[in-house]
Length: 275
Image (cartoon, rainbow, N blue to C red; front, side, top):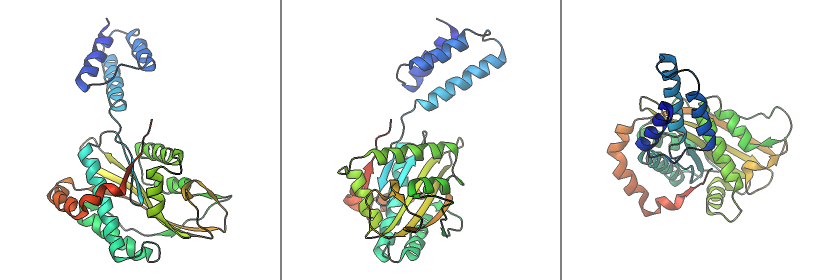
């Protein structure tokens, strides 16, 4: 067995990974058959390949519908950090809805929403809505949302957002997650929803690329994200910002947040399966 193959096996054991896929085996075989490993460049190349493999094969934190938000998570976010994000976003949404109608008094609703997130440890910049102008053709809200978030998101965040939207789109009409999302995001011909992706940097900083959206339309439609809307049939307003998370601050509030949300917290969350 070559040095490269030994390295792969040790890496797999250390990180409790599944057996290599054929493509991954081929990648290591091609590297093992090249120049000897005693050269620094080869060692660095192999290490980089192994680290990329380890990152790719970590368990993917599942995305989730969280009331009127769709949240995605980049590999590296721990289960506790995922729960903290879901619960803090849910508390912000439910707190805002307790004071304001999220469809009729949307601007005030978002003011309370952002205020609550900030109190829980999510720092934000100025949060302002602007009307979305479709360049040409019909409007699809999932594509518009991604275009807005792309300005602030990393490639990894955009990748998991695409996966999550694909998973949501693939759900059957009677699926609990799609029914949950429709219930919390639309009323008659109005809508209010958020799409976000949470990522943890190499130095441990947690950030969220968050897009916020509200709209009015000529008619009410289920699965509104994935339908084509005519140029004059919908008015969409968008906002996006990158938020960073003070995990130490939130840790002091975690029990209080969970107590406030109560036993109903899980009723607002619907996990999505991704490949």
